[in-house]
Length: 241
Image 1 (tube, one colour):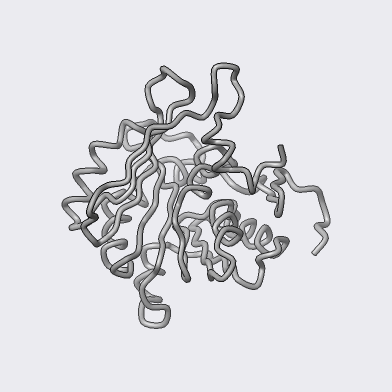
Image 2: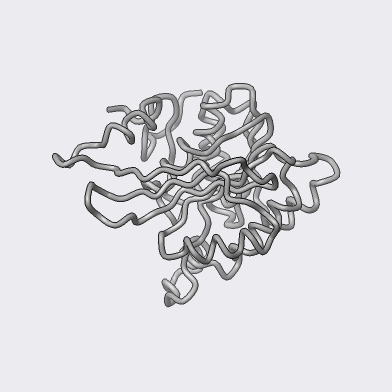
C-alpha cells in the first residue's frame, strides 16, 4: 500500500503517522518493541501509534497481534499505520478500554502468549491540560495494579507481560508483581550513558516462577554519544541508520 502522505517516522520495513497521538514515538517504545518476547498471539495494551505492535509483528512473522487503544483519534491512527504496513493481515487495532476488552474477549480469543505495554507512568504529576495527554501520561485510567491483574488473568502459563517503566517505579512494581502472584522473569536496567544512573527498567513478568531471573544493566549511548553496541544490536532490524 502506498501512503497518501509522508510518514512522520520511518523504520526499515514500516512507517508511522503520529500527529493524532498524544504521546509521540520515543526511545521507550522502541526499546520495548525490540526487547519484549512475543508468541503466537500478542496484545499491546495502550498501543498509541501502534509502534510496539508493529515491531512485534515484524519480529514474530507467524504472530497475530492486537493493539488496544482508548483514545479514538490514536486508535484510528494506529489502524491507519497498521493498514499501511506489510503486516496488515496479522495486526488488528481496536478502539476500546483495554482492560474491559480483554475480559470481554476472553471466551473467544482465549489466553495470550504475550502482553506488552508502555503504560502511563505518572501518579502525582499535575495534569498536562490535555485530556489526551493526561490519559497517555497519567495512570489514573490504567494503574499498574490493574495491568498486572489482567496479566494474571489472561496470560498463558508460559506467557509474559513486558513493560518499560521509569526507574522510580521499579520498587513499587516489584511489590505489586508479588501481590498479584506473578514473578519477575526478565529485568534490564537502562541508563542513557556509561556512569549514569539508570532511567528506565525493562521488565517481563509471568505466572511461572523462573529458575533464575534474567538480569542486565545496559546503556543507550557510548562515550562518543553514539548508540551503544547493545542498543545497535537490539534495534538493528528497525532504525534506518
